[in-house]
Amino acid sequence: MVSPFIPLESNPDVLNRLASSLGLASPVSFHDVYSLDDESLLSFIPRPALALLLVFPISAAYEAYKDSEDAARPVYEPSPDDGVIWLKQTIGNACGTYAVLHALLNAPSLTFTPSSLLATYKHDLPPLSLPARTAYIESSTALRTQHAAVASDGETAAPAAEDDTNLHFVAFVKTQDGVLYELDGRRKGPIERARLAEDEDVLSEKATGFVKLFMEREASAAKEEEGSGSYLQFSLVALAPSFD
Image (tube, rainbow, N blue to C red):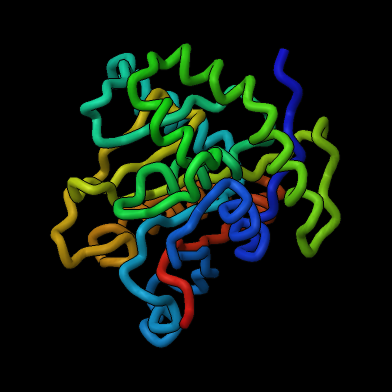
């Protein structure tokens, strides 16, 4: 039994500290996204945006949707030629760290400090089978240490690792070959959502349409559930160039 992590706060400062401690060397960072429709608010985010991390409340409607979509998909078998690194989440409350790894390991042209965790993962993970990848991450004491160092550092008091939380992270990433993937360790594998043109990033209309559908589906389901207020706790951050 793998012991759970302390849940990670969806806070750019926390996510940036984690990314740095894992070995991110490129001049990119996580930024709050306050709107997907208001151009004046979107203009504050440097472009191109490489990945989006969406935090949402897990609802019965989402679980039904997830199970139905996954049932129609084949069992995922990773390959070094995939063009994507997907990790199955088997560590409780670690969805934030899995989402950060999915973003950083799959966004194109990022550089990592030599011998860092990110550099090591980028080299070691692609040839591994899914069970081997899973065991590799589960046994990474360095990852657990780096996560723990930042998880208690947010603006709100961190819950205990044993606490159940209904909030979950999912990453949307544009990879080197222009594919927009939804990457979620609770799914059956990486999900190809769209092919993006060279000038389309993850904040382009084509990409954000999938995020909006995601949020609209949960908001609609929440209206049908008694005491549904907690189901509307969404937050969104973008991985994009750092401010000068």
